[in-house]
Image 1 (tube, rainbow, N blue to C red):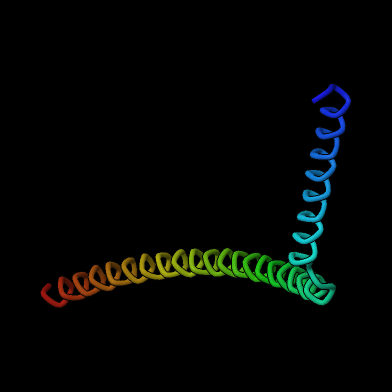
Image 2: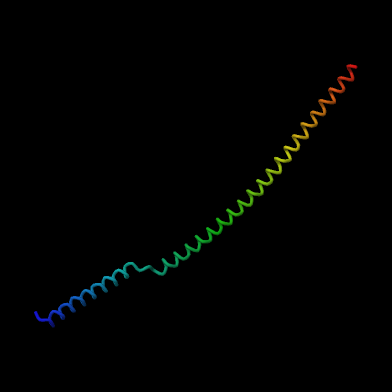
Length: 108
């Protein structure tokens, strides 16, 4: 086999390999191509997911604000309760002192 024949055979083998590779690539893309309807459906689903995430974020923000408001209100109510209990304790002490004073004066 001469040098020219060898080059021609190698060129033919490379050309056949290129054609087979191109044909395999074409088949692969033909069978794995995504339909336009599927792409539209994926776009719609991604938009709905984005809207759902925004709604979730808004709900979380609202719940955090509401929790802060309720925590503040609870703290105020507890402070008022402590103040009322201290006032009641003071009133009971004063009533006991007045009873003791009245009982001492009756005994005299």
